[in-house]
Image (cartoon, rainbow, N blue to C red; front, side, top):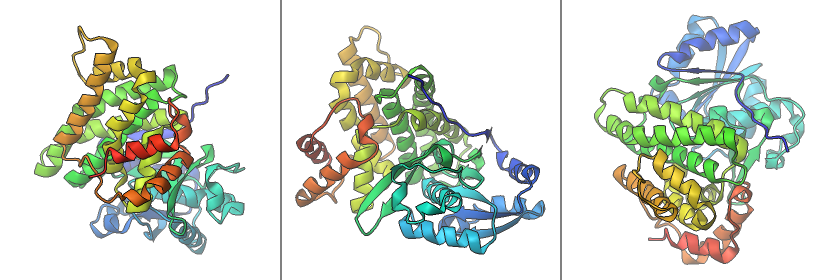
Length: 386
């Protein structure tokens, strides 16, 4: 069996990397960009760091900011209309996962109009054409949407999130500039950082994991474990951004891996919490990560022992089971150190059957290394009830 690996055509990394954007557009002869960015980034001038570069280089652009934290079908459809109304021929996505996921869906529908209903993109859609040319600029160190073939859209009518997986949606160019992440508040830094750690650990333990993805995931776990506490502290104090630089790279490397091998039950359950209770995705992932690791431990203990080592745990003298437990404890400690809540008070007993069914139907669940049934998932959700 062949193992497929999909990455950006080009990516730029490091402070000031956004300066490469106008040249990438000019070399390809594009005429006008639809800039997709969320309203807060526009309001606080983060998006302007990029649009000023476009202005200075004479690149025409138009703004689309009708994007919610959990982007909806309607957001995507409005974006498609905005793309056509602007006579745009490419997209610049600036923001966290919400902006980039919205841009991916817009780009796919623009070149594959038969999927205009958006719902038909769920799962692995058989699109024929690559999305509109897209440059993705993350402003958070967590989702890695700039390098993945996945995006998530919320169906408000059915109160659910659905995952779309499509090699045609990956942005051709990723600009991973830690300076664009400098405005993240501490809470967002913590939540997105734990999302990145979840990507790395789930990607390393998913059924599809293999040598190439393992290399990325173990390095990502190391970088995130070394840098996340410092990044959160820097967000609180405004001190120099060494932790943010490490997080910018770590989250991207995690994305290089999990995009190609899948995730597992943690993300399946986290998507459900976000859809039903609007729980921030990274917070949901963090709450569930040690619980998912414990559930999967019987079949991945050796891999969890490797996770412990990557997180900096001294496992000398430990057996496999003890080292696996140490990995779970290290995740719990990291989450506590950056003030992530351990429980979700919004979950109600009467909701458990519905959210368990939704989690098992999520596109991330099949990658989980251990089978779970309805009652098991209900029990896992109970572990994070207040």
